[in-house]
Length: 497
Image 1 (cartoon, rainbow, N blue to C red):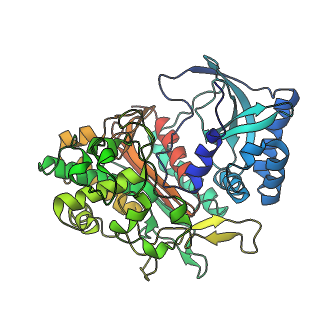
Image 2: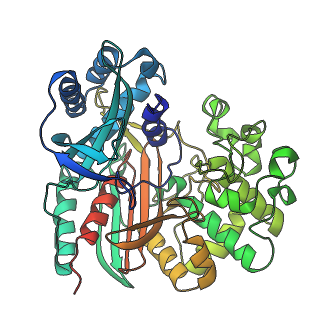
């Protein structure tokens, strides 16, 4: 069945205008179709469209994107979002790849309706994909998606000795930092031993303040891990049940009982509630000044309806995670932010983590930046796009060192019990547990979360079987995910002793 143009904007909207769901490390998950790669460019219109797509990505110019969208895409595609959004999506993809080269066409068994093109990126040497649909007599593009990709079937698997990991990371970060392709901080550890750290770029381009390991970066959706851990703490103490309907804790000033009676705490934790995102027109057209406390977000939620029946399927929901903050406040009688400070940050030793307010002069806090190659300054900051204060669904701040402390505290039993960890890190819907992504692949079981928003990107991966922890935080648009993915690939290639 042909996908709708909404297929396109799973990438556009997810990357640019919402706290991000966990980023897949591959275009194919275990158990899906097998595939074969053919390294021959197709002829005819399909080949022309592929070459045009690669050329517009590598051009890294807003005018080229506008021309491409107007010439090669359907009207429905063009009108799905403002042209600025199309432009930002392409420019962000270039920023995260440094350009791409054609490698192959991927053919699946059973066959997929879209054309899948495998690319190798210039910055990381990682595999990428774009998939698209053509429609009508003019064979215009009606669906387009960018994603990571598994290694092609016609190349030898990468292998690495563990002793080479840190030197390889040093060479990679040196290249990225010299090209200003990464701005942020990285930490890689095995067990309790930190193997590699690096910070580069600027926390403030206006005043040329360098990023450091203890620079506070915005987390985007990574705060969902803290919120979910707090819920598991309360469940352990018998303060709530994961099967409770949220009507026990969320009154009708938020949503009607016809909704909250159907939705359970479990549904909120697993993104199966049917609720959507409070980043709606009211948010984008309003003042950021309005949203500081959990209650301040109530006008953005009120009137929201279920997109599907609770438990029916996965649907990433910022509203759902926000309501978990309401549950925490209702159960404890405490302000959400106070509870997280006292029960997550403090016992984990996270000394540089909080939901800081962006209009206060918080020390050592990075400002987010979005590529703007056609502007005189080449960048714009995200101060007028971002929430003024984060909350249960995301938007707080932390450091790579604090994220490592969080991972250690979880595994060491300082925050919740082993049985609660197992529940939290069991995939309930595809690759998502309770507030954590759960990936099973070449590196065994890996849990964590990513986060993103215009001008920020972060990722935490905890390799439960191999013992590694990888924290990457960036104040660049889509700045952390490509690096985190490359480190994931490198760890997956390490030879077992």
